[in-house]
Length: 132
Image 1 (cartoon, rainbow, N blue to C red):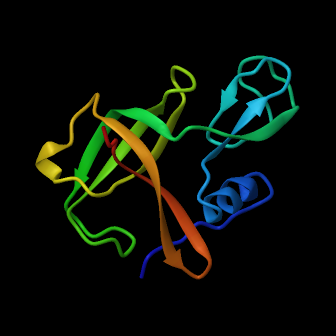
Image 2 (image 1 turned 135 degrees about the vertical axis):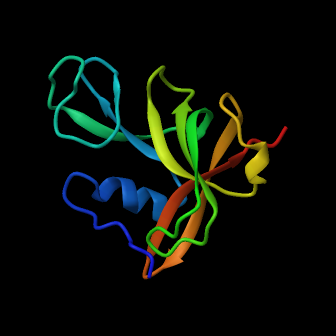
């Protein structure tokens, strides 16, 4: 059985946006810094005025691993990628890589967000190779 996210007050915006097939990241209204993973304060200026903002969903693979052991009900093997989004250096999202042969996954690969509806009203942001 696949483990699904359990939204809370801090992450609910993220999962609601994913259900609409939008990738939203918190952004500090004081200094403009994107903040991910979702939290209550800006790590750059300590401001508490953070608001969700839709981002492009484009980025590059910063790091990855190929999982060969079943994890949380996901068919194996699969690629788990750490994607650096183009909006800000160091702004990274962890997700699965879809629609790509595992032997073609590489650091620096251009990717874009896609959304996987997994049932129970849950949609997961995932990534796939960017189309030219």
